[in-house]
Each structure stands twice: as structure tokens, then as C-alpha cells.
Image 1 (cartoon, rainbow, N blue to C red):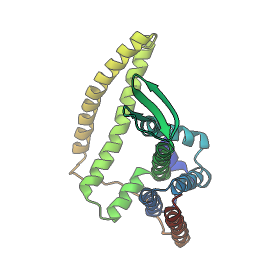
Image 2: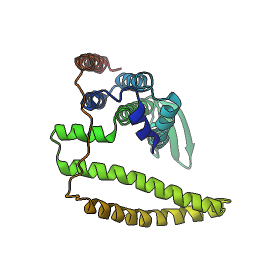
Image 3: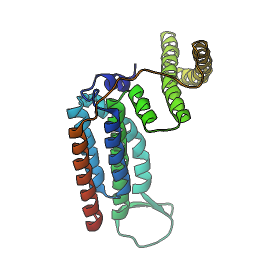
Length: 262
């Protein structure tokens, strides 16, 4: 079982109504995306980190390890925005620059601000989704989606996609273990060869496994809808009031930050 899935079933907010958690995460995500403010992004990131780690009880090492995954991809995008490349001889207020073969590489205050805004908004958005994923099992999410009258086709695709994530992971782990015991990763050359073989074999086996799963579902009366039992939750008035207060405060900070340009 993936760590994310394990935390979703064992965290301290497991018994909180899934709709409340979804509303809190999505409203915060919406405000973070609406306001182009680094202050709002940092506040959102801090808020979601504290709630996820302190309130939900997710180990901080595991949380920051998961946050490092999108951060590693984000670094490339931030660098492309933060570093200005030009061949034109235009006077700019460079904070630092290097010219080679008629091409100038440099950074300006504007490019650094844009890069910081992108990094802050992206990490804040990821933290909102991590909160929802780490505190709410998929069964509860799909039950909440049904109550919100979301089309059943979308819900079924979500459930099947989620199931096949485990199929791909299990298949990849089996192939990797088999290659490792045969010294498939003993050198750089063997690693590239083994990785290519793993990638090619993975999707073939996963496709075969998906066919077996569909056959098993059909044999058990699958008619296009997965019926699962979801526990009943009570709506908490205290949680609703808390969510309302937090979102109003975040909205106020966003408005003030937009006016003052911070």
C-alpha cells in the first residue's frame, strides 16, 4: 500500500466528514490561484503544512519527502523564468549577468519576483492537494463526489485509475526486483538497458493485469458502476465555522496584498 494511502486511513482527521475536508482544501486552493500574491501563497503553504503535519499527525519527514518530489520538477520551471536570455543589446537593470558569444544570461528583479511567485503558488497548490490526499481515503472521496452529483462516469474513471496505480507499482516492483537479483543495475550501461526493458515490459504486463481485473469484475456482476460501502459521517458545525473563519481571513489577506502589491 502506498504511504499516501496508508496515511489516509490512519491520520487523526480520518473521522472528519470528507466533504468538509474537500471544501477546505479546494476553497484554499481556489483563493491561492486567484490571488497573484506571494504573501497569500506562503500563507497557504504554511497553513496546509501545519494542518497536515500537526493536526492530522502526518510525519513531517514523510510530508517533506513528498513535497520534495514536485519541488524537483518545479526547479526547472523556476530557472527558466528566473534567468533571462537575450541576444539584444538592451539596457536592463541586471542583478547579475554573463555574456558569451553575443548571448546574455542574467537575472533581474522582475524575473526573480516572477519565479518566486510561480514557486510559491505551485507549492501552495500542491500542499492543498496533499492535505486532501493524506487525510481522506479514496472511498470517502468518491462517496462525497456522488453526494455532490458529479457524473458517475467521472467517478468510475477516478476509481479505476486509482486502482491501476497500484497495479503499475506492483508490476514495476516485481520487474525491478527480478532485474536486481540478476545484476541488472550493476553498472551504468546495465542500468540503462534494464530501465528500458522495465519500461517496455511494464505496460505490457499492466495491460494484461488490467484485462484480468476487468474479467474478474465482470464475473462478479460489474455493470459499469462500482458499488462500495462508505462509512457515515456527521457534519461538524464547529469545523464549518472554523473553515469559514480561515477562508475569510485568507480572503482578507489576499485583498490587502493585492491592494498593496505584496
